[in-house]
Amino acid sequence: MGKDSINLHKIKKYSFPGQHHNEDIVLILRKHKLTLLGYALRLLALIFLPVIFYIFVIPIVFTAFLEDSYNKVFILFSIIYYGFVWILAFFIWIDYYLDIWIVTNQRLLNIEQIGFFNRVVSELDLKKIQDITSRVHGLFPTMFGFGNIHIQTAAKEHKFELKSIPHPITVRREIVKLYTHAKESDKFIFRDRDE
Image (cartoon, rainbow, N blue to C red; front, side, top):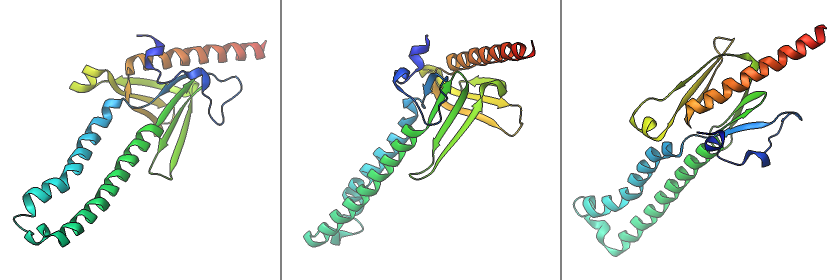
């Protein structure tokens, strides 16, 4: 499984604000698309809720809504309800699409969208990594090849977590390779300055 199979984009054309002039993007990661399945099933249930209510509850409990004038009120409330379901679906998509991890040859960036108007960006210098663990847990993650990566830094309370990413073992190996390269180049620069 090569490096290209874990990228979601052709990374050559991408850049991000604050990118250093000698910094190359190695990986761009998002959650696995299968993580949207649970949300899709819930949205599907919400979509059919007014129809089920109209077929099973109204004829028994609210028989007045079967009359033409009250029927229009039910349709109006249903349209408003579906508007909220649409906003919820849009919110889920925005949260999925804008949560992103960028791995460069120097650092790891975690960009997390929280709601519509709140974004948190965290970064971690690759040289500060103390421990990196990949975990694939469960039937669907094992079958479809996604899982979590936990990255521990020197500070005990600071831990990066890449959740539900595709090919976590391959990504972990790539980050370890980048970490090793960053440490070696840092030693070379350090030795060069001492000489």
